[in-house]
Image (cartoon, rainbow, N blue to C red; front, side, top):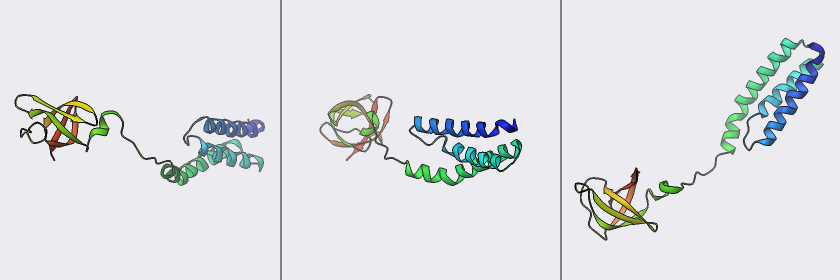
Length: 144
Protein backbone atom coordinates (compact mmCIF):
# COMPACT_ATOMS: atom_id res chain seq x y z
CA UNK A 1 0.00 0.00 0.00
CA UNK A 2 2.85 2.37 0.85
CA UNK A 3 4.25 2.27 -2.69
CA UNK A 4 0.85 3.22 -4.16
CA UNK A 5 0.03 5.97 -1.68
CA UNK A 6 1.35 8.73 -3.96
CA UNK A 7 -0.94 7.55 -6.77
CA UNK A 8 -3.89 7.36 -4.39
CA UNK A 9 -3.42 10.98 -3.28
CA UNK A 10 -2.93 12.20 -6.85
CA UNK A 11 -6.13 10.37 -7.83
CA UNK A 12 -8.06 11.84 -4.87
CA UNK A 13 -6.80 15.32 -5.79
CA UNK A 14 -7.80 14.95 -9.45
CA UNK A 15 -11.18 13.48 -8.55
CA UNK A 16 -11.91 16.29 -6.08
CA UNK A 17 -10.90 18.91 -8.66
CA UNK A 18 -13.14 17.30 -11.29
CA UNK A 19 -16.09 17.16 -8.89
CA UNK A 20 -15.51 20.79 -7.95
CA UNK A 21 -15.35 21.80 -11.61
CA UNK A 22 -18.57 19.93 -12.39
CA UNK A 23 -20.63 21.62 -9.69
CA UNK A 24 -21.66 25.21 -9.21
CA UNK A 25 -21.03 25.18 -5.47
CA UNK A 26 -17.99 24.50 -3.35
CA UNK A 27 -18.38 20.84 -2.43
CA UNK A 28 -15.00 19.20 -2.66
CA UNK A 29 -12.29 21.85 -2.62
CA UNK A 30 -11.42 20.94 0.95
CA UNK A 31 -10.49 17.42 -0.13
CA UNK A 32 -8.01 18.89 -2.61
CA UNK A 33 -6.12 20.58 0.24
CA UNK A 34 -6.22 17.43 2.33
CA UNK A 35 -5.06 15.19 -0.50
CA UNK A 36 -2.21 17.55 -1.40
CA UNK A 37 -1.09 17.63 2.23
CA UNK A 38 -1.24 13.82 2.41
CA UNK A 39 0.71 13.59 -0.85
CA UNK A 40 3.42 15.83 0.59
CA UNK A 41 3.47 13.75 3.77
CA UNK A 42 3.92 10.61 1.66
CA UNK A 43 6.70 12.16 -0.41
CA UNK A 44 8.67 13.03 2.73
CA UNK A 45 8.36 9.47 4.01
CA UNK A 46 5.31 9.31 6.29
CA UNK A 47 3.58 5.93 6.45
CA UNK A 48 0.09 5.51 5.01
CA UNK A 49 -1.71 5.80 8.36
CA UNK A 50 -0.02 9.16 9.01
CA UNK A 51 -0.95 10.27 5.48
CA UNK A 52 -4.62 9.41 6.12
CA UNK A 53 -4.53 11.33 9.41
CA UNK A 54 -2.91 14.33 7.69
CA UNK A 55 -5.58 14.13 4.96
CA UNK A 56 -8.41 14.14 7.53
CA UNK A 57 -6.96 16.92 9.67
CA UNK A 58 -6.07 19.26 6.79
CA UNK A 59 -9.46 18.64 5.14
CA UNK A 60 -11.27 19.53 8.37
CA UNK A 61 -9.13 22.61 8.95
CA UNK A 62 -9.71 23.78 5.37
CA UNK A 63 -13.43 23.25 5.79
CA UNK A 64 -13.58 25.11 9.11
CA UNK A 65 -11.49 28.04 7.85
CA UNK A 66 -13.00 28.50 4.41
CA UNK A 67 -16.64 27.45 4.73
CA UNK A 68 -17.79 30.74 6.35
CA UNK A 69 -16.00 32.71 3.62
CA UNK A 70 -17.53 30.60 0.87
CA UNK A 71 -20.97 30.85 2.44
CA UNK A 72 -20.77 34.66 2.66
CA UNK A 73 -19.43 34.97 -0.88
CA UNK A 74 -22.18 32.80 -2.31
CA UNK A 75 -25.07 34.64 -0.68
CA UNK A 76 -27.56 35.78 -3.23
CA UNK A 77 -30.68 37.82 -2.95
CA UNK A 78 -33.66 35.53 -2.78
CA UNK A 79 -36.34 36.70 -5.12
CA UNK A 80 -39.87 35.61 -4.40
CA UNK A 81 -41.66 33.79 -7.15
CA UNK A 82 -45.20 32.58 -7.63
CA UNK A 83 -47.59 33.29 -4.76
CA UNK A 84 -44.98 34.59 -2.31
CA UNK A 85 -44.49 37.71 -4.39
CA UNK A 86 -47.97 38.95 -3.41
CA UNK A 87 -47.24 39.24 0.33
CA UNK A 88 -46.83 42.89 1.31
CA UNK A 89 -48.36 44.16 -1.92
CA UNK A 90 -51.44 46.33 -2.19
CA UNK A 91 -54.66 45.10 -3.76
CA UNK A 92 -58.23 46.24 -4.34
CA UNK A 93 -61.29 44.41 -3.03
CA UNK A 94 -63.44 43.36 -5.99
CA UNK A 95 -66.00 41.35 -4.00
CA UNK A 96 -66.88 42.38 -0.43
CA UNK A 97 -64.83 40.41 2.12
CA UNK A 98 -66.89 38.77 4.85
CA UNK A 99 -65.20 35.93 6.76
CA UNK A 100 -68.46 34.72 8.31
CA UNK A 101 -70.10 34.23 4.91
CA UNK A 102 -66.87 32.91 3.38
CA UNK A 103 -66.87 35.46 0.58
CA UNK A 104 -64.43 38.00 -0.72
CA UNK A 105 -62.14 38.61 -3.62
CA UNK A 106 -59.10 40.83 -4.20
CA UNK A 107 -57.29 41.90 -7.33
CA UNK A 108 -53.53 42.21 -6.90
CA UNK A 109 -50.81 42.52 -9.54
CA UNK A 110 -53.35 41.70 -12.24
CA UNK A 111 -54.52 38.47 -10.57
CA UNK A 112 -57.81 37.79 -8.86
CA UNK A 113 -57.72 35.89 -5.55
CA UNK A 114 -60.21 34.72 -2.96
CA UNK A 115 -59.60 36.67 0.21
CA UNK A 116 -60.30 36.77 3.93
CA UNK A 117 -59.90 39.60 6.39
CA UNK A 118 -56.86 39.46 8.72
CA UNK A 119 -58.84 40.52 11.81
CA UNK A 120 -62.26 39.22 10.75
CA UNK A 121 -63.84 42.60 10.05
CA UNK A 122 -65.73 42.96 6.75
CA UNK A 123 -64.02 44.99 4.03
CA UNK A 124 -66.12 46.70 1.40
CA UNK A 125 -65.72 46.54 -2.36
CA UNK A 126 -63.19 48.97 -3.93
CA UNK A 127 -61.25 49.40 -0.65
CA UNK A 128 -57.47 49.14 -0.76
CA UNK A 129 -55.93 46.29 1.22
CA UNK A 130 -52.47 44.95 2.01
CA UNK A 131 -51.75 41.25 1.58
CA UNK A 132 -50.51 39.96 4.94
CA UNK A 133 -50.05 36.30 4.05
CA UNK A 134 -51.38 33.46 1.95
CA UNK A 135 -53.20 30.46 3.38
CA UNK A 136 -53.78 27.79 0.78
CA UNK A 137 -55.42 29.60 -2.12
CA UNK A 138 -56.73 32.57 -0.12
CA UNK A 139 -55.11 35.89 0.54
CA UNK A 140 -55.28 37.14 4.11
CA UNK A 141 -55.61 40.92 3.90
CA UNK A 142 -55.94 43.97 6.10
CA UNK A 143 -57.32 47.43 5.34
CA UNK A 144 -54.76 49.89 4.04
